[in-house]
Image 1: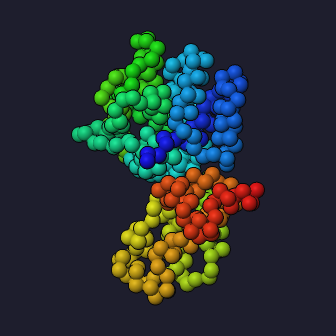
Image 2 (image 1 turned 30 degrees about the vertical axis):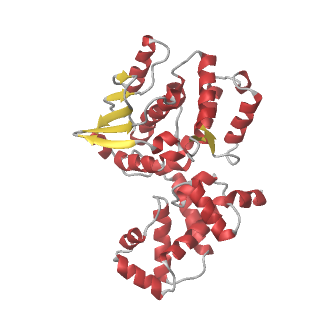
Image 3 (image 1 turned 135 degrees about the vertical axis):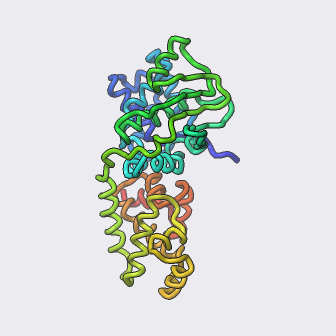
Length: 339
């Protein structure tokens, strides 16, 4: 059975932000059922994702209301760090565009399923981000996703990407005169009805350093990490060092024994032996760290999807299964008990 395609509710919040700036009443565009969905998503804690089909319908209704087929580009212009949640701050903490792109690729599913399908291809001195899905494709959502990539680079490096070309697999809406809007936005030739969608820019762009990384939230996360360490049973210096390194690794993805060994300047075999001497396995140590971190994040009302990412899980369902194994309940049930 295939999973239902989803988008992060942060994108829906970005759409609402756009409507508020344009002074457009939600009730003028959406019906009661849609308003309930929008309210639940914007509340932050009630739902973290919405089905692509529902989000696309909302975008299309807004485009029809405004008679603005390029609505995806208009909404993307308002993107900021907060709109990507924890992912936005983690991108800002990267050293350069290459590192940020790899992190975006890894965690792209927190934005939408299309990002998960993205391929990064180097062709000579060019980098192409390619989405190989055949038609039909959710054109309006795809346009918004590429526009977010272009716009977010403004915040990461202080200028838009020097894009060589943009290709869309879907057809252009609104007539040839609308093509100028796309080309002006991306600053390059834009073609529609292509075999696949693609976004191309010079390879040297990957080395551009991230401008003024926003460490504010990461400092908060570090404080929570320190609190988590204090909450754990007293251990020796070695295990405390290992726990601290695991916390850092969790923010970068699924930690491995080999990664931890490199962080501690040990061979994998030596690390295993040291852990055995302390009567703990790598998985036990990782579970302990994750559980304590999770407790801190739940108390801080971090969205569950962001907690899953911060703990290094591949998706929210994997985090939920682990939490149920630790506690016998789901994180959602635990949060309801606390509220």
